[in-house]
Image 1 (spheres, one colour):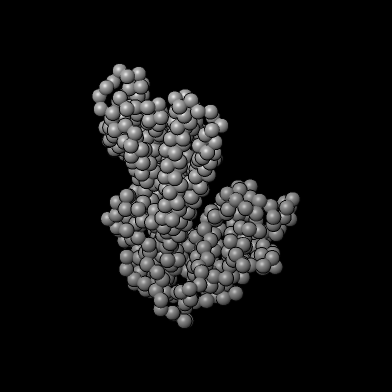
Image 2: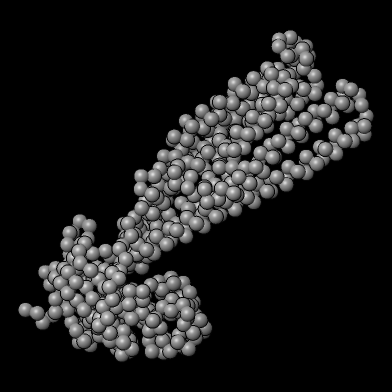
Length: 551
């Protein structure tokens, strides 16, 4: 929600897994109470055997109770780990699913401000950073309050002076946690931003590797990646320095407090201290308090360690909130234009920093028509297609679809191809398509022709973005996807760019078949062959879309 703080966002996500968090905290508290019982039983057995000189077998009941406690502690640990892991996994699954839905709703223009690498970093590393907060830090908050209080009460019941030493040293740990947390949160936020930039930088250089090699700049690109990764290393080391320094400080104060309690108990047992309850200290009470002293600080030390999980989560949440707050494009107009598959009226398109780039007074595309839109590079052809698809909100005007609920087909250049088989890439156009429909689309688009030369045919796996295929073959796969799609409207951005004459003929034949099936096609292209094959030709001139023969 607008105006929320990262802490409020985390609190809302925690409310969805409140049951798992409570179970994890309860199991942690139960383990802490078992530690108190274990310390008491050990102290009593030592006291009974050493001071009371009782035979060990005479304390069978205490030994059996100790064995039960020792066995129950791992059970509590397992229960806590399972509940905490379930909480972290559920939160990550919910948040990642919600963000993916947001990205799909925003479309390519809505997330254009972020590089693909930065966006991938948000959906992976930054979402994963939430796991430690929910699976470790949140349950430990309850344990760090309840267990030390229980241990403090047990210590007060035996020796109020030793308990007072523990009580006076306890506030130092939360104090240093807060001081360290102020810097750790900022460092983690900077680290995530650096990782997002590094991801985008590396991905951009990787995609342009062939071009960089042809230009002889591959070495410079490698040096840039090395410098960016080294900067990220330095930021990571700053985070680790804060973590190690804070852990060392907390361990120091805890060790000093435990040492003070140990010295007090030892001198009291030897009779060197006669102040307060010291003369009444017995082997049982002294050993009991001494065993409890390290356990008193253990939950606080664990919370201090997990405090960095909190800092990491807060650093990641700001970027996740920014993505969630990005406004979605408005839904398609609900009006149904029955005569037209597509109708746009009084359309004004803008781009940040450029103002209005294109105006469309009225555009109607009926079923079965191939409309070509031409214009100079940068004139707004792709922006027009994005607006017609509902991915770019116009600053004025309306776009209406004859079937608002129907999907819209998209064919770009270069086309998007996933790292999957040819068959699966074609099926992206219609997930429910049967094998006969896929085979027909592959035949019509000419995919079967080159697939027959591959060992696995249509089951041959290709790389991301069509790695392993030529540009023409990749375009044929995209055309087959369009052919199998049930979309009544297809938007095509330079579908024949950089294709040879034979492949271009196959693509144009496929487009003709789509039109014959009653599809409406809007094609952005400056290719004379495509324009000649179209039913209508409109041109972008001086920021306005108008018929090509318009004076």
